[in-house]
Image 1 (cartoon, rainbow, N blue to C red):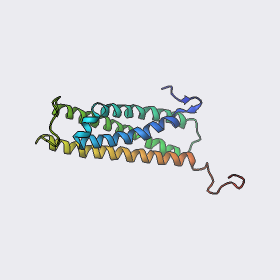
Image 2 (cartoon, rainbow, N blue to C red; image 1 turned 45 degrees about the vertical axis):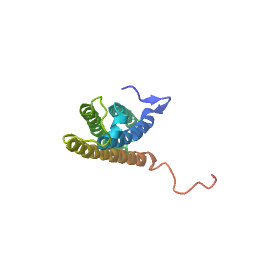
Image 3 (cartoon, rainbow, N blue to C red; image 1 turned 90 degrees about the horizontal axis):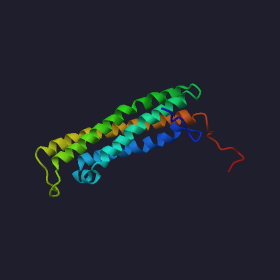
Image 4 (cartoon, one colour; image 1 turned 30 degrees about the horizontal axis):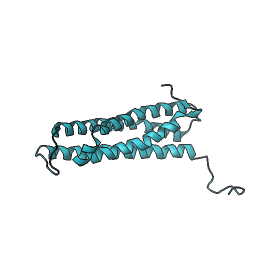
Length: 171
């Protein structure tokens, strides 16, 4: 894609911070918006917009990571990290699709007239429960996958790079 280096630093090392923050934040926002209409009312279009930015950040980060993989020594830990990283895109797509669906459903069931706090429709409640359960599954899955990728990346980057004991001449 062309974004391999930024100011001489591998872009992956910088982009990964966007993914580590946005994907779990999107997951949390999705779960809250699906479960609580009052939160969805405040988020509005920001929910699918946040999910879209998260989705876009994933392939940018993985493409930059693939470039970086070709520029480091062959290592099984790096390969494992790369394989796990490739598994995040379906979760990010799921976050986006469910976020867009939750937003769309909220817009369809809550037209521009404000409803009384606490009112629910008989059709909306089962659909909101289903959306909340689906949001929980997608959100937790995405969060766990981000953790697994980050853990494997830290192991790949740091497994030979430090000493368990401090150097004697350094404070």
